[in-house]
Length: 217
Image (cartoon, rainbow, N blue to C red; front, side, top):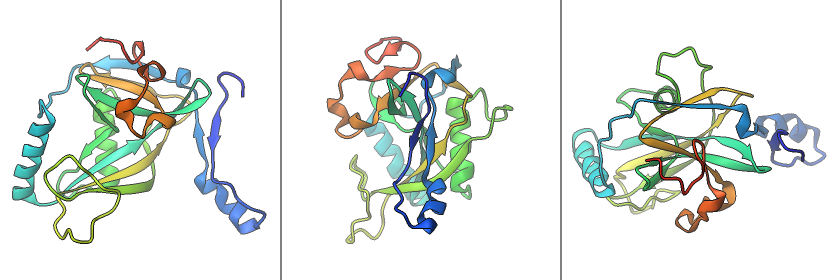
């Protein structure tokens, strides 16, 4: 593959024509990072200084409103001829997929588009191309007020505290990403998503500065 070419990710289909017809539903065009514009905007207010603060707020919200639902975006770009996942980093500590908590009565799609516009667009009412939210890729569950999440709901858990839904978000050929100044947008190789605390920072790319060991925060 030459530099700047589009990467196509797809599940293979056999010689069955019906399988071939459905293949388009599973194709994801991944465009080079240099096709996108990245800018910044005013910092967002943060509700939690530490992970412990976040868990305390989760407990308080659960007592008031019950199960909390988070929606998160899986966004892919091509860099160094490999697909990379876009992650947001807060104060050089936690890494998160773009997204956030749903409001009461808000649908998954509405909530995810709202959160993406708030964290990755100029503002929620901008004329930017609408986010194309695709299939739900999976759900993770938080059984208790702790940091551990599971990709399934343990059978002995009747009242989970949080559900996180992951959705594929397909990017157009180009668009603008406007990121709050107190967030760092990173492109992380897919091969380093697992055991990310052991990831080699040299292969993780800060959208603003280059190598992720930058210290602009």
